[in-house]
Length: 442
Ligand SMILES: Cc1ncc(COP(=O)(O)O)c(C=O)c1O
Image (cartoon, rainbow, N blue to C red):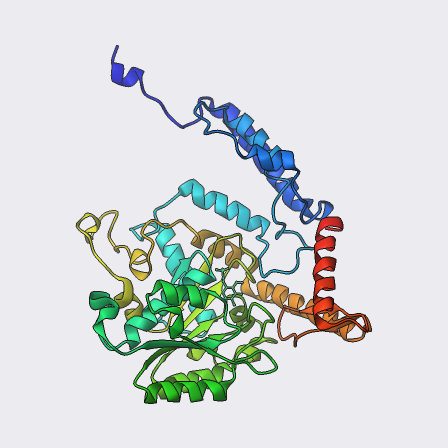
């Protein structure tokens, strides 16, 4: 007997028929779970017994797929944070779609390596990027990459901005290449990816010039200009202005036209964070709100928010595709490219970001765009904004509720008010109301 063949082990099912029937059960359960989402609470607290049960030891001996699935159904499935539910409010988190679930399954079935390679999945990502660029008003010479989220999209773009505007070879010399202080500008309502990114790129948090906002929570353009002027006169090196279309707190949209003009005047990069708000552009009704975003040097946008795809999926676009590549491209002997064969076409996606091994995110975008069509998706976005505007109107007419900020898009901040209570007391009361709603009525 050949000991090598005798000892062979595998992670494939021992009995494919049995596995197929379990897999069908999983799929049926998953579809029931999605179809009946409204019949469950959005969120429920976990009993201590469930919470404590996750301290179990490393499973050295397997229990089999059926038993592992039963365990998943009992201890995990009933306890999500709730974002796929129609009564989940309070955070900017997408829901996913049933088709997105299926596309994700098909994508991981193929499980292609998405650094690039000579394969149809790579063409799908190229096509999806082209579609998104076109929708955002970007030229064909722009480039883009699907990434995990808005945070990653923004940080990659900030790296391109640093490369483009620092005036020396930052890839070679790092931040030792200059004595000048490289500075980034954004409003106090900028999402905290900016602090994380600025730290990560070695600029230090002090390099983030936090510009005050107007009563509408948009960047104060005059103040931005003054800060830039002062910094330039002090010999500093401004490299990037961050504008936001749809801030995470209130949905505010910065004056993007003015930001584009100022960026040109001061020769800095204009980075547009449109994590969800950029998609207003695909709606004829909302498009004027984000006018000017197409002038940005780079746009970031999430597909796991207003395009409703399952996590994770976002996109970074860079107007000057050459610059994007120049900021990230690198080679290695084990990645040598040939003109024929599996690696023909190279590894374009690995060369536009940090990740080498990437999953097939593009399939869920491609299938969703094709199946639903962008006109339909735009209608869903319109409907979302109409609903919020209706709700805002109800709140304006209520004596007991108060709107706390303008409602330009799909985010609304409001609270319960009771005469005679201080602001701090009202905030405490509203926090309590919020938490009780989560615990009792979700
Ligand atoms: C305006 C804005 N930028 C960036 C982000 C971060 O995106 P992600 O959570 O996908 O990393 C968010 C998330 O809500 C956001 O609203």
